[in-house]
Figure 1 (cartoon, helix red, strand yellow):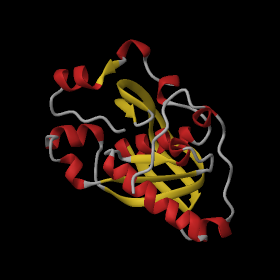
Figure 2 (spheres, rainbow, N blue to C red; figure 1 turned 180 degrees about the horizontal axis):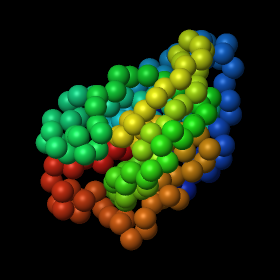
Figure 3 (cartoon, rainbow, N blue to C red; figure 1 turned 90 degrees about the vertical axis):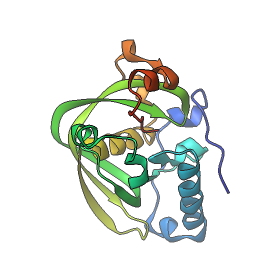
Length: 188
């Protein structure tokens, strides 16, 4: 089953999400929600989905950058973006720590802001402290594209959208973005 993705303008996208308890993370309802979020993210397709994007104001996001999403990109483009496959996982109650603040500038899109993309400066490397699917503490070290995905999804959990951080003069439709850079894909 694919869940409805809420779009910009829905108040849930602009409020801080509620933290989850460890017991909640292990509950059947959250386990089921994670599976539905995975299906919804894959169907979109996207590389991340935060719970506020499906109308749930809880501090939970799913992330996955499948190898098949990389096939349209050249090895040079993959290297330039620092893009490698990322296995499916969740982050709950995440806390972001910037490891390398050097700005990386890549185009971003968002499932909640359909049809548009813009260049967004993000930290090159981050560390995320969170809880995993079992409610256990985890620390994720990420660089490049993966760091960008994490920052994008964690922004959703505090009520921030990429349009709040973008270089406004780079805003474009996905169609125009693809025409300028045929092999480029935009994380959504």
